[in-house]
Length: 125
Image (cartoon, rainbow, N blue to C red; front, side, top):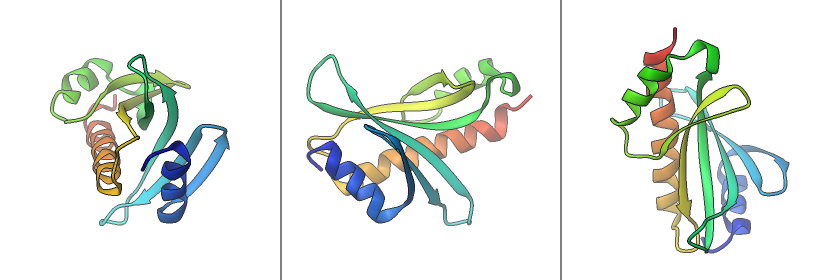
């Protein structure tokens, strides 16, 4: 993948999706166990330059999640960090897209959504 257009075309070809605005795409995937997971991908500017994307996946509502447990738990996962947006606690990971393969994208997606699911299972109040 070399551009945002290629990333969004890949998502449109392989996932259920919504495009709520320019530079954003929501994807929904169905895991092997039949469970659904969602990730939000956004085109971002990175201070180092180049084309980057940010992928986030929800853990839970701010008031229903033990934030300390989330912060402790994210250390067990190979992706990104934690953020809050629209009253949701999110797993967040930013990556360059100019030289990203489809396999690299799938690793990021699986890491972000897997971390969110695992954390959600253990941090609800």
